[in-house]
Image 1 (cartoon, helix red, strand yellow):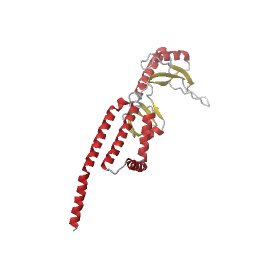
Image 2 (cartoon, rainbow, N blue to C red; image 1 turned 60 degrees about the vertical axis):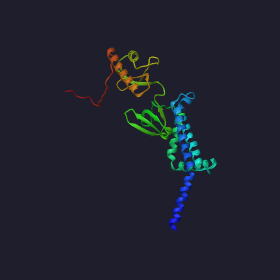
Image 3 (cartoon, helix red, strand yellow; image 1 turned 120 degrees about the vertical axis):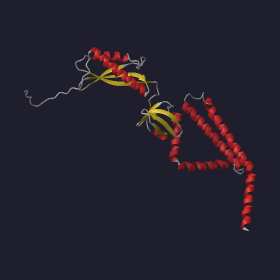
Image 4 (cartoon, one colour; image 1 turned 45 degrees about the horizontal axis):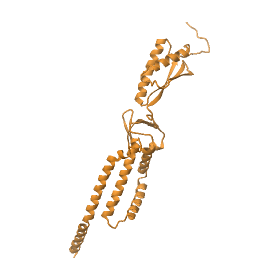
Length: 281
């Protein structure tokens, strides 16, 4: 009796499965069509939004959102085909309950997800930009929805959660093609300051890495312990390598020019005063 019951149950399940096979095939076809439409959206999405904005990250965001919407609609249609009794209202209700449960379980992931969308939408960060956030400084390689990959200037790859970039001040170093660099030059107290300023300005202007269309600013700044401190400012490229190259060229040119002009760059001086005279023997 038990054997007959098991066999009849298996026959009934098999019959139901065979009877439901057209729905399964139709849902698989729907998923394949969704996959194809999603690939078309990813391929032609950039062309579709090329007149909307010039920002690459924003175009990628539009494409990702459109692709996600395509998959959501496709999965809902496939589910309704697979289960004929499932209505759009029931499907959307189930999706709503599932999203609430997933949101509570993966709160941190969704915070980074929405922070990534806001970064792609509002932040002036593009792939290839150099940024500095807290103690992280490097070139942005990939801006994803949840994480951002930053290649530090020392070569290491840092995977940064987007929420970290969203909550902390982020300096976009290469937001412009130029950046101002500054060094301090000290000249001896007996030197004539206007002559020293003229020599330094001529030396800085002769450097190839200094932008000629932007002003060179040189100001005597303070009375140092051993010298008059002169602040030297100029404009050059914005990347960290360009800043280092330009600073090296300017320091070298200023040192050579001051030496040729006979203007002393003093070593630190120390004056010692004793309460009682020292006897010399």
